[in-house]
Length: 130
Image 1 (cartoon, rainbow, N blue to C red):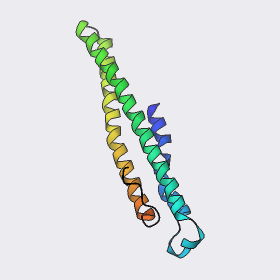
Image 2 (image 1 turned 90 degrees about the vertical axis):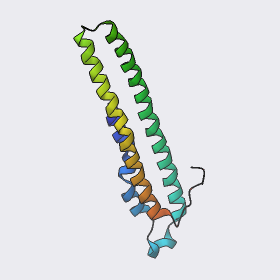
Image 3 (image 1 turned 90 degrees about the horizontal axis):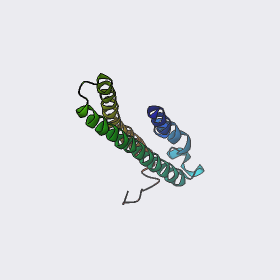
């Protein structure tokens, strides 16, 4: 379920090239559209999307880490409980998967910022503190 949520939340990054191609003009059409405003809005959208996804992933990691910790404690009390062991392994796998999503997120974000900067660097300068 959380992977589906991430997929939906990554829509802006998946469509950034199309968005820039349709909203930020090439040099020959520069006078017809306010590219600085368009780039500013896209910048704000990207910042918000990246922050939201980061919060969701880290929240999932924190919750799953807590479940893993609890299951480990239970496992130490009941070494013969195979159901508990299976549940622990399942949660540990889920935790590793979520942690790897942070790496995926970094790649997705880097790609989006690269494309954004290629098209918007002459139209919009992001604030220094971000």
